[in-house]
Length: 292
Image 1 (cartoon, rainbow, N blue to C red):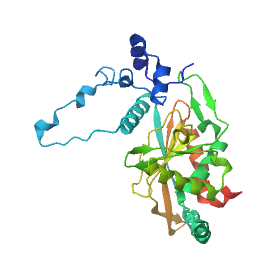
Image 2: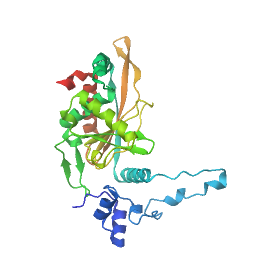
Image 3: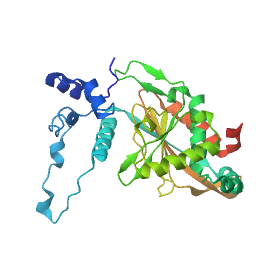
Image 4: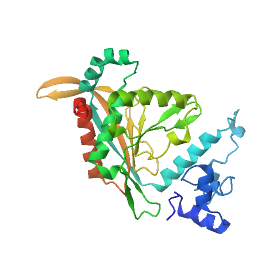
């Protein structure tokens, strides 16, 4: 059975045109295909969901400038559009107390310096996600293209979304469940630097169990990340904020990391997502549990 991800209208058009979707996906180096991938040209308005609505001469309203999208950015845009149109996604929002995590991370600074490793909070999030995927195997899965079979994975690979000048890249930390914080931190730094320099190989991308997209260094309080197929969920992180927590009648300021889990509702229901995030939140709140 083909595992190419394409809408019914794209499959019908491919059949009419005599296009082999498997061969076309292989030639493009990805599994998600949109209408414009069938002939390399723009899709007709009917197949692309009404593209004519934004086929506008903007210059008639005032000065404009044009900036061609790179091939990489075009591929990313088509994949995101296909994912958004094909996946019934829901986003679950949660917050995690990071006071213990930050205290523990600060205590490791001398060792981090001696190792020459930048130990960021993201390393803890990767470790927590890896352990959560083991505890909730339905999240470490992919749905077949026909929607009839769930493929449960016997490995835990974590994708890290990296914002680069040439577009979004998602290198993967392989077998994250078998690695300690130092190794995870080292790999995060290495992959991020090489992604910025466009030195990530094809074998270092794809095959992730789940992806983390981290906006914590930029800002925001919440967002809705788009599920990256064939994964069934994606975890978003935004900037830590101080929240007032009440101990009886006593207010206490607590640093909280906002967490946003988008998931494919065909595979995961709301209760599953809530339990998954409670487990994840508790690991982040007590990071020493991840070292056992």
